[in-house]
Amino acid sequence: MIKLPKIALIVLCLTAFCVSAVNNPVGEARKTNAADFFRHPQKSENYNEMWSYVFILDNGTKIYVNYTWMYVPTQGFKIGTDFSVWNFKGKSYSVGRQYPTDRFVENKNANSISINNDDYLMEKLPGVGHRILFSANKNGRKFLDLTFTSAVNGQVQGDGVFSVDGAKFGLFVHIPYGRVKGRLGIGEDTVEVQGYGYMDHAWQTEKPAEMATRMITFSMPSSKSFIAGRISVTKNGEPFGYAINHLESSSGIIYASSVLEDEKKYSPKKFPKNLAFVWNNPAIAPLKFEAKAQETFSILSNFDGFLERNAVKLALGELLYKRGRSVTEYGKLDWVIAGF
Image 1 (spheres, rainbow, N blue to C red):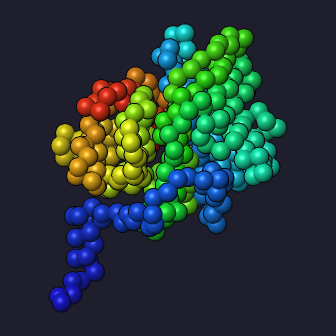
Image 2: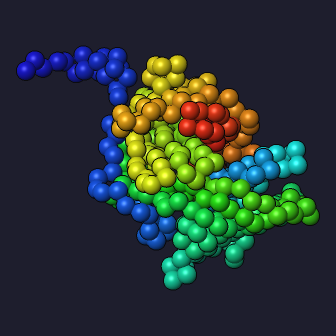
Image 3: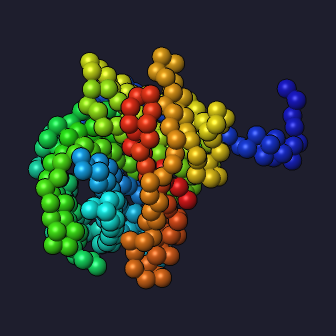
C-alpha cells in the first residue's frame, strides 16, 4: 500500500469535497409507538428536538406548527413554540414564543405533552384522535385546535437513529397522511376548518446548521397512494432521512440514494430550482418537482428584540423556509425546503 503524505491526503479530501459519512438506522421497519413520540434527551449541549406539523386545508390555507426543545446560547435550554399560517382569507400570520423547560410536561399515562399550562398541546398518541392545540396572544390572538379524524400508520426503521459524521439524528414520521378537522382563529375571527395533515418528530445532537444545509419535508393530499417524509442534505450533498411510500394495500420505508437538481447532484449552497429524489428501491420512480415557492418565511421573524433574535440565530442559524405546491407524476406535492 502506498502511503501518502498528510498534505496530499488533505488535498485529496478537499478535491473530493470530503464526502459526509451517513449511516442509516439498523433494524426492521416497524410502526411508531409511544416511546418514539416522547422526548429523547441526549447528553449534548447542542441537542435539540422538534415536533413538526404541516396542515393543508381544503380552503387553500396552509398551517405550520413546531414545538421545539432547543439550546439557546447564554440562556440554556428553552422550549420554543411557533405557528405560521399562509393565505387565511388572503393574509399570512406568524407567532413564536419561548418558555423555560419546566413548562414542558409529559403525561405518559395520558399519552400527551403540554406546554405552558395547556396553552399548547399534543394530545393522545399520533394517529386517529391525535389533537394539536396552539393558543398564543402575542401581537393579536392566534389559535389552532385540530384533531386527526383519520391517519395512515407512521413507520420508522429500527431505533430511527442516523449517524451523520459522528453526530446522531433521530427521525420518526408519525403521521404521513391524515384528515383533520377543527378550528383556526386569528384575532376574533375563528372558523371551522378541515383538510389533511402530516406530522414528524426529529432530534439531533448537533446544531441543525452543522448537520444539514437543506431539510425537505413533503406530503401529498391523497390517502390511497403517496410519498411523504423528510429528507435532509449535508453540506456535501449527501442525503439522510426517509420517506414512506404508501400504496392502497401496503406501505414501506424508502431512502434517497441521491438528490438531484437538473439531473446532477444537488449542491445545497443555494436553494434549488427543482429537485429529484432517487430512491434506494429502483422499482420506485424518482420523485421530481419544481421548487417554485409560494412563500418564503424566516423563523427569526417570530422573535422579538435584537438580543432574542441573535440568540436564536446562534442556536439554530438564519433558518429560512420556502414553501410551495408542485405537480408531479405521483400527483400534487406539498413541500417545505428549510435552509440556512
